[in-house]
Length: 74
Image (cartoon, rainbow, N blue to C red; front, top):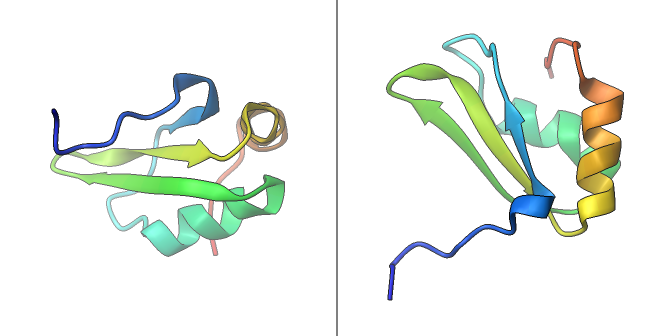
């Protein structure tokens, strides 16, 4: 068994084009407005992207619609 819990892909959102200083807190702050989060993972090497997992796939869809093309800042 993998030591990493598998993510529900219907609840998972890719966040791209992040600056190298983007923080987990900034991502959580922007995305938690759309619903409860299960997990946030921010890439560090190489930087520039993140994955956000919601509890409910409908919240993930709402976040994509609401945040697509916007800048994430706290």
